[in-house]
Figure (cartoon, one colour):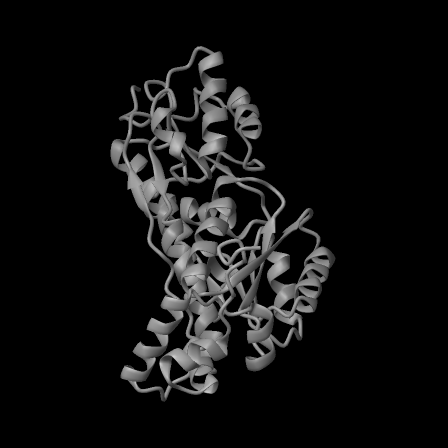
Length: 339
C-alpha cells in the first residue's frame, strides 16, 4: 500500500494540544466553553482544531465532562403543521447551541405513555427534556415527575409556568375575531381544536373574550380534531342563516370548512367569511386565499432552546418567558357581511 492509499490519521485531542502548544486540559476547556481561558490561547486552540479538522468524540466528551449535550424531545403522534414546525425549529436551535436531540413520538396522549417516554429518554442520559404538549393532563404529569433534569413544555395559556414556552394563542385569537367584528360581523362561530389541547383552549378563550368586549354573544361553538375532515363535517352542518363568519382554530380545518361550503353552493367570503390560524404555506393558495393568524415557529424554537440553556447552565430559577406574538395576515376569505 502506497502512502497515498493509507487512510489519513484521525487527529486527537493531544495532536491539537501539541499544535497549539498547550495542555490537553486547556483544549478540553476550550471545547467545553469553560471560562478562564485567555482569548489568545483560545484562538490558538481553535485554529489548531480547524487546521487538524479535529472532531471530539461525543462519548469521550461525556466521560470527561459528565455531560452528554443531548436533549430529549417528545412530539405528538400526528403530523400536524404546528407541532412539526416547532420540532424542526427546535432542532435547528439545538444544533446552533451544539446540542444533539433525541426525538420520540407519543403515539397517544395518554399520561402513562408520556411518563414512559420521559423515563426512556432519561435512560439515554439526556440533560433536559422538551415536551410539545397536546393535552393539558400531560403538563400535570411531567411537572409531578422527579426527573432530575429540566423538563420544558411547549404549551399555551393558563397552564404555563417557569419552564413553559408558547406563542400567544390567546391574543392571536382575539386579533382574528376583532378583524371580523371590525368588518361588521355579529354572528361569529368558532370551530375549535380538541377540548384537551392547551392551544385550542386559549384560542377558544380569545374568541369568547373578544366577542364579550364587543357585546356579542358566543353561541356557535364546535370542536374538531385539527383535520380538514373535521372542518368539512362542521361546514356541512353550519347554518348560513344564523352565521356570517367563522373563526377556525387551524388552517387545515379551515380548508375543509371552505370545501364544504363550496359544495353547498355557499361563497366565501360573500356568504360566510373565514379566518384560520397558523398560516400554513398553502394558505395563500386556498380558494379563496385564506385570512389567517401567522405563528412564528422559528422564534418559538429559539425560545425553547434558550429556556433549556438557562435551566442547564445558569443553575438559577428560570423566569417565566413572555409568549411570542402572532400576526394577522389579510387575504381574500374575509369581507364585510352581505346582509
